[in-house]
Length: 212
Ligand code: ATP
Ligand code: ZN
Image (cartoon, rainbow, N blue to C red; front, side, top):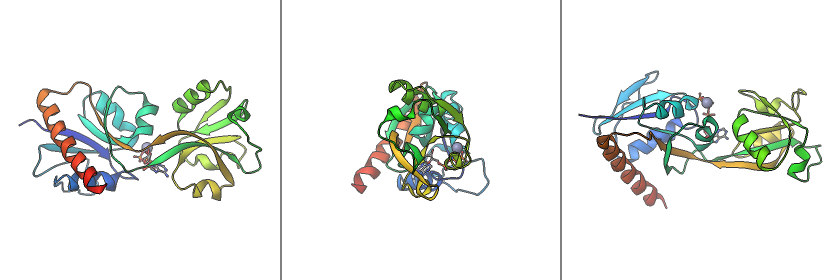
């Protein structure tokens, strides 16, 4: 029998809620630590555990049929995938932040600044949309320390409560994107896989309704 292959985050902020959602959909998976993949015992589902950054590519290539990943990652990676359903967890925003002492009144104040971010594609689009010229410095982690060490004038990073920004002497000045975890799917699913996906989405929608 055909199986649906789903990619979820191996560890990190989306891992637990992704497993929990599958459980709430009545799908039992034994989630062994350090495993690369596992199978559901009561649904034709194979689960791959991956880094979130790699998930859009795996789905585009059809190595995974579907996946759970932040919308922010889907947009940054510019992969051809369908966003099938928003999942109501992993909520955050991608925001511009500047040092508290920066006298910021509008997006024009970002002109000619150096902006540190792990999201160069989304930031470039934001700057273009607003007609701003600025220099993007791509860094992969600890973006919030960049202004303090003189690497950048501003940052664009994921925020949920804002406490990390505050602790680093930064203030949030623009929301670039609002994001949450989404179910993404490959453009070229076999009919049988599409049927399994429909079944899964039906269950996810029921779980979401029950929570409202
Ligand atoms: P990986 O090891 O899989 O590459 P990561 O470190 O890139 O993990 P996490 O920090 O676990 O990623 O975040 C995964 C996703 O969780 C983000 O892409 C985003 O969609 C979501 N998220 C929700 N709140 C936050 C937050 N406050 N900071 C960062 N990400 C958040
Ligand atoms: Zn990542």
